Image (tube, rainbow over all chains, first blue to last red; front, side, top):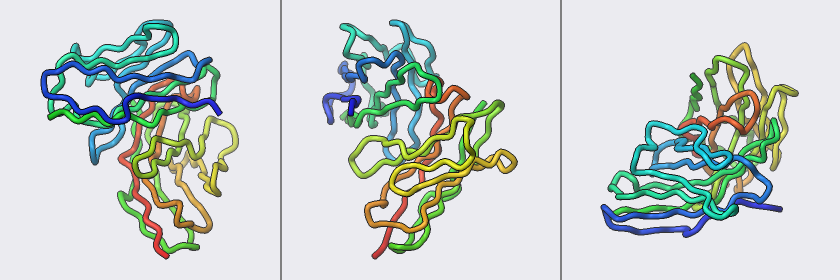
Length: 114
Length: 115
């Protein structure tokens, strides 16, 4: 069964450093999403992406964040200058573009900012 | 605006007894509703979904949920709990087309199953 994959599973970085989280969505899916879950809190929507542009973003997704689909298979989330409060689990999801289907989630990347 | 409230942060049951995880939603239009499960150190797995078809929805592993518009509820049930059901469960609301719109998650309910 096709699945969404994410790398790395765990990333440790120092405050102020740039990080790139990588996702490979399911191959025939058209819409892509990033969510995050700060430890002990609910899962929050960050951004959705379709046809090589952002379709919606939350207030969390400020200028420090960017997304890209550089090569037609990977979908990346970049945080330019990490803060302590960026420590969270980041989930990538994809949707096939067919009505009434659900979003398919990857296993997540745990980002720890020290 | 949409929101979802999971009424219990923790639920504890004995193996073999019924499970009830409660969820209420708020939506200005006909929503899609989902239950996702997260086992420790794992990703989010879809249990079941409601997208304006039958109001009683059956999912994987014996779980089911009933969409009640009059009560704005989408409670998750299972007749007999298994040890492997111990996990975090999230009730999720979205727009009417299923997964197109952003997902709004509840705070989660941690289910503990005791022998």
